[in-house]
Amino acid sequence: MWYTFLRKSLSEGREIVVKILADGLTSEQAKNVEIDLIAQHGRRAIGGGTLMNISAGGDGIDSEVAKEIHSRPGMKEKIGRAISAAAARPEVKQLRIRSLKQAYANPEVIRRVSDAVRNALQNPEVKERHSTGVHNSWAKPGEREKRIEAILQANQNPEVRARHVAANRKTHADPTVQAKRAAVFADPLFRERHAAATKSAMASPEIKEKVAAGLLKAWSHPELRKKAKDSASVRFSVQAERDRVATKTKLAAASRKAYCAEKGITNPGKGYCHIDREDFKRWLVGKKK
Image (tube, rainbow, N blue to C red; front, side, top):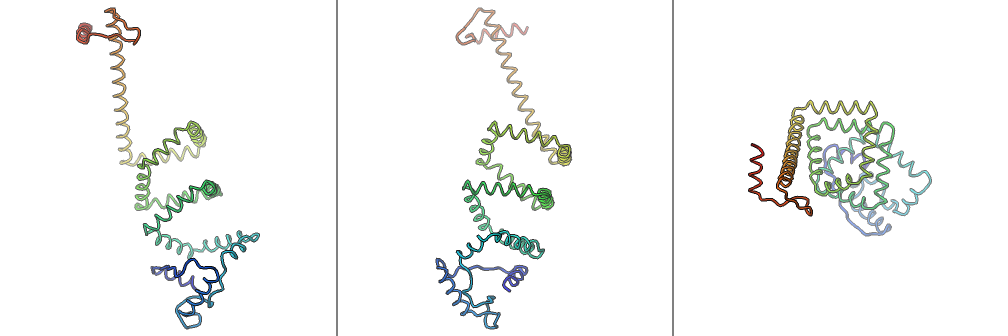
């Protein structure tokens, strides 16, 4: 009854307000408070109030009993299957999506969830379990393709794509993230593993074809092509300036060496000779003539 009312309320866009009326109670105290409140407000089930409760209260189970039930052999798997079956129902999926959208529209909720995840992952054991879970999830047959398809489909929405790009730019511009990435790529073992993984992936004709198709598709975008050309132009200009300075330095060193040899000036300690700049300039002019 309650869940039917909850689904209907959320589908109609109503706000569900949660209030904590009592805290820090024992299991017995909490049950007594529940009985008193239900008696005070009445139950719809018996036509005498506003609450959705079927019973008069006090018949719930406490945390210790719940732990004992969950510890029974096969119980976790049974509950997991029941939850998966319920989550697979279209109406439940839509309800969950609406609830999540409603919750994540609140910046405070996003902040609290992010802080909670960040704090939890500070624990090495939790981090390891999370990493293993993600790896196993992606390793399921068809799961990778399904998730990639969902991401590609979501990115067809210009608004979603814009948010994704903005989030990536913000992350990449973060000095802390940049420092962490630089530290990771500075590790020779990581670079070796990364190069080996890339080489192994590109050895697959299918992946090579996908990469080529992606590059061709990206290169066909006028704005991206312009950015790439501008970036390449800057890189080539910088390299050309470096080459010019290097050439000039080499020529200057060769001219200085020839001048010192001709004048009989040596300075073995430093590897170069001290010269009269004005005389050196006149000497260069004479050589150019």
